[in-house]
Length: 203
Image (cartoon, one colour):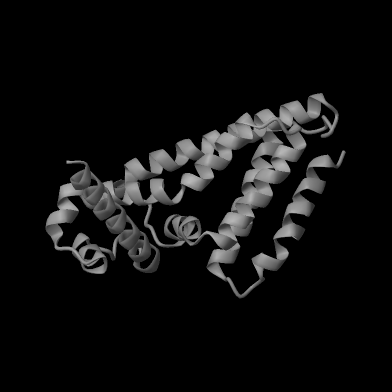
């Protein structure tokens, strides 16, 4: 019985990985469950056993590929580092994941460049917006603490600064994914991290 469960989980993971590849390449609308089955090496039977419809699989793909981001948010909430150092680590790690983790990168490729934001993906969008609010909320809490200990000036509201961090991260992310030859993020990530941290400390 245990072996059967392990095999089922391996099948599910292989389907998710195949779907991640196809969604990032073709987009949500242009990818079918039959195509995913072919990519994974399965008939549609195993696909429908694990996922009743395409959006269920789409949600599973994003949940799987964004686990590192969710872990990053959780670590930022639970670390013993000073708040400003925690923000810097968060920003640097975001860029590291974007450059080095193909699945993490593909999740943004799917959402930002390959998916029409229609009712068909409403459940997925709800999940993504919840994650976004969690991330911004975490950054805001850290900035409140950083202002309290004097490492960030109190000239701007922490909620504004949290949005600044988020929008700059997303701006670099979307720009690089849209035109990867525009700049070498692997070489420029330290620059982007440093400039962002400097902007937080300006009066």
